Amino acid sequence: MNFTRWSARLPGTQRRAAARTDRGSVPAARAEYEQRPDPVTDVPALEDLSVGEILGGLPALVALVYGPEHRVAYVNDAYATAFGPRAPGTTAAESCPELAELGLLPLLDQVLRSGKPRTVKSRKVQVAGEGSYTVTCTPVDCRGTGGVLVFAADVTAHAEAAERLRTSERRHRKTAVTLQRSLLPQELEQPDDLRVAATYQPGGEDAAVGGDWYDVITLGAGRTALVIGDVMGRGVRAAAVMGQLRTAVRAYARLDLPPHEVLQLLDGLASEIDASQIATCVYAVHDPNEGRLVYASAGHLPILVRAEDGTVQRAEDPTGPPLGTGGWLHSSGTIPLAPGSTAVLYTDGLVERRGEDIDEGVASLERALAGAQGSPQVVCDRLIRSLGVTADHDDDVAVLVLQYPSRTGPDAELFHNAALDLLGGIEAAPRARAFATGVLASWRFPVELCDLGVLATSELVANSLQHGTPPMRLRLRRTDRRLIIEVTDGDEHLPRRRRAEPADEAGRGISIIATIASSWGSRRTPGGGKAVWCEFALPH
Picture 1 (cartoon, rainbow, N blue to C red):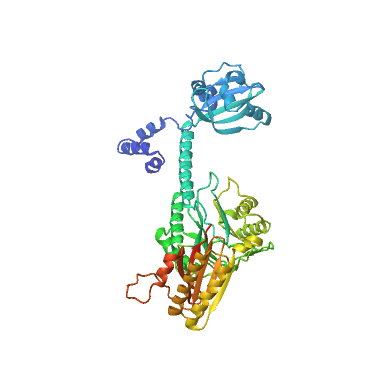
Picture 2: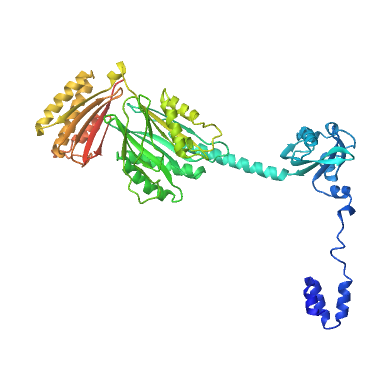
């Protein structure tokens, strides 16, 4: 045989030895190779080994029991070290309390009856010091009678590590839930014309806390902003982003901007906070004088409105992409909200289910809302139950319910509206004062409040006549808590309060309003005009 071909077949060490002898004697190298033990024929056969030697040398705990009473036939050294030696022939119930503590005695019966192995994972035992074991019970033939081989692996270290991890996750989740709840409004503002309630429910223990949030913001002049959103992250970071967005919404709401402009500002802010986390949001404004919700949506689920007769309407377009995506001009839409109506704003955790189209979930919510009666909090609870949200739900859920009650009887006497178109130039001022005097007297306000109301009307109308453009309109509104005076005109320049010098003949109107009224404000109206308003708190 050619040496090169022969040596190529050798293992590496033998090939090198052969190479060294090649310069000397090839027959000597061949003789050395032939004297080496055959690696195949020298492997011991399994039947050459004792079962006792195999089981005794295992680090796992092994016991063999036989018969219907599960008598002990054998335990290996590892088993005896862990739980103590066991006398052969004794029953497992008598001498093996660890098997009872691990809950294995019924399992031994099942294995004998079925002839199939069974495994239990990571069970604790206290017999010989606390430990955790994973145990497999395998049926065997033991001298013609049924037996069970018990094979237990000590997983104490793994179980303790897993428990530490679970404890850390629970602590992290508790921190996130606490942060989430602290950033949500602790008590909702209650507008004069609406009744509102909200519910937040975090997901189950296995679900990471998200960034669901909601808010109710009174804007003045009887108008109310309602907002709900969902940060698409999880954990403390999502809750922190949510808190920043909610704070920003409250700040932007004070500017009394249209809903789409608020979302435009939020979109830019969301990109600056964290470009990797986006959020959905819907922002709506209710004006009791208009009987509708004006809203804008950034990738959020549609508002649902239930009319007094039980029919449910879904607010559709316009919907833009989520906050933080940038490059989109949002727009506002409207949906009717007449007296007696109920509106629901919600996050996807209420309607989204694995393996089900989200439109089916929204349709289920519509059906549940159609039959929901009672106060806003009752409606919240019923919707949560109807949609199958439990403490083990796999996502957090936020629901905001608002009702525009239909008032009758004595309650209706506390809510009135009166309006006057301001025509004819400067002569409109005395007509406005006379109108306000008559209306406030008919509403049976105290004389002092009537005088303040007439003075405020005079100043607002004079300001509009001097700086505004037609059409102009005076509106008086009373609720059970306040008197609202508002003047609208066609000019979009908003007034601002300034300090008037002694020699100035103008510039004191807004300062007077700010001094005598509980609050005042202004906003731009659709079509390029503005509204200036003030409020007086009614005596209790």
